[in-house]
Length: 157
Image 1 (spheres, rainbow, N blue to C red):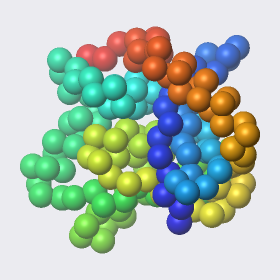
Image 2: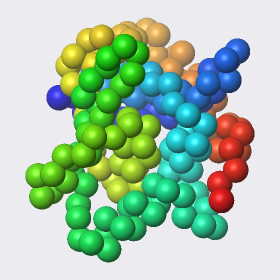
Image 3: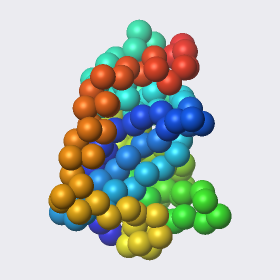
Image 4: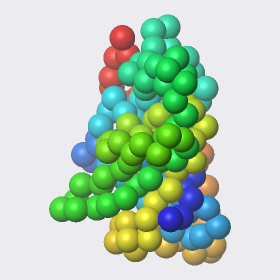
């Protein structure tokens, strides 16, 4: 397992499909995962420290976990089959629950839980970006600093 950081979310053009970009900690691979607009908004809210007037689903899930005394200890991006990524939520009790990576990432950001990717997923879908291409990643980060969750075209209720 390789620890991953969330670089951010953006809208891929011309399809207008949101994407979350993860970076291998201590490595040079990046993992792009296409996600839905609702999850993109949830991830962007969490990264920007925005708290909606009413809790989003991921905020509610975090609150429920706290209320029942369960601790989320890891999020794992475990598999890629036929273009679909799979993830697991791992709890301190040892229970593991299957989840969509986008939901798992949104929850991890809210709970401060580390995110990991398997070697297989990173080997199959990871994109190596050597240090000399790091300025492209920096441009992506600058882009992320200029967008807001509203750019994803969803209404949070």
